[in-house]
Image 1 (cartoon, rainbow, N blue to C red):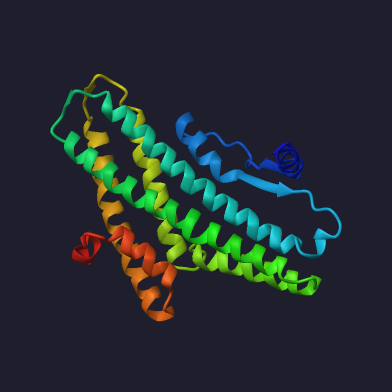
Image 2 (tube, rainbow, N blue to C red):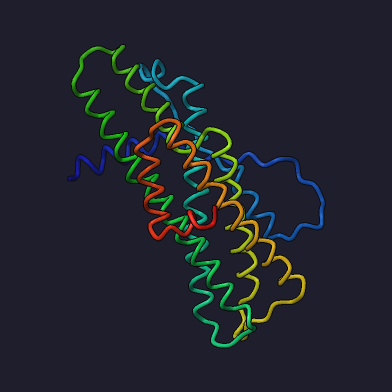
Amino acid sequence: MIKIAMDHEELAKQFELTLSLPPVQSSGVSLKSKMTNSWKYVGMSHKVSWPLHVVLTPATLEKYSALFHFLLSLRRAQAYLQQCWATLMTIRTGAHCLQAVWQLRTHMGFLIDNLQYYVQVDVLETQFSQLLNRIKSTHDFEAVKVAHSDFVKTLQSQLFFTEPIRRCVYEILELCFSFSELIQTLRREEFVFSSKEQEAFHRISVDFRRQSSLLFRVLSAAKNHHSAPHIAQLLLRIDYNRYFTNLS
């Protein structure tokens, strides 16, 4: 156990978080919005030592960086929605729209939780296990390179790195961030929306309904076109009660 912990510690030292902020510009955007937007500039770098540089090329590391950014965004959305749940639980009285707010948070949380499970279990754990099996079954370095290349390509394919799925997923994540930012500004005992906040909530609600329905249709088309069992499993989870089917 101690050796495993030490190995993990040594491995962790090879990775660094990076922050590449653009030039500072004055604007009317709130500090909270700026902090939320700054997350997209967070990246990951890796110190590649010999002979791993043959496998982990600059192009491959760039792909891993994009994967890291997507996984971080998905986990942030999940954490923010959980915080929204905690905030809403403190509200005892409020406007008539409180039920609609709870409903939207529930729909967002359901979709994001299922996407997170799909990413973690159906894709990452499954593909990483297959990669290890392929590496263990060969002593040929070229075979290892091919196995790793296939692994990265499969991750990109199954983690929505193709259009229009990629754009649709990121739109949904941005809507979750916007919803969370709106709710966190309402830390009060009595839930009251201003007319501007009511308009913002309505826009987020309509856009989320449209984007989530679009994601379901795009995934369904991809499943039918490519006969993809991993997508079929995801669709089964998010549409178990045929909610999205009835929306389409």
